[in-house]
Image (spheres, rainbow, N blue to C red):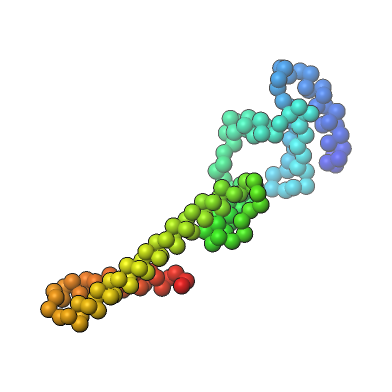
Length: 163
């Protein structure tokens, strides 16, 4: 039976079925061919709300676990929004649902920027102290060696961050 013919039959049946369910219930007819989009059909009765249908399916065991292209797409969008926020680029339009993810990324980006600036400052000051100690002489060499190692660690981290 072609999809259009099935749709017509299902629409005719919805009103008949709706007469036999308790008041306040919402009715959906869903037909799909697993793994293919060629026969996806979702027919809600006029008063039906798809969110209520999803809640009912979750109560029956539907889970956010497992592969699903819609969920993967939503997750990709959230990750992208956080990435753009961290980089402080491409903010979403006003009142867009992705704004909170962009804001999370932006907060992380700001924190990273602050930490990098703090590390650069600490590295600069430690280097200045090391130069004074080297030129003055007479200080404990263990302090100089430990500070030199700390400078190497700071330099290695800072080398990963664009100037």
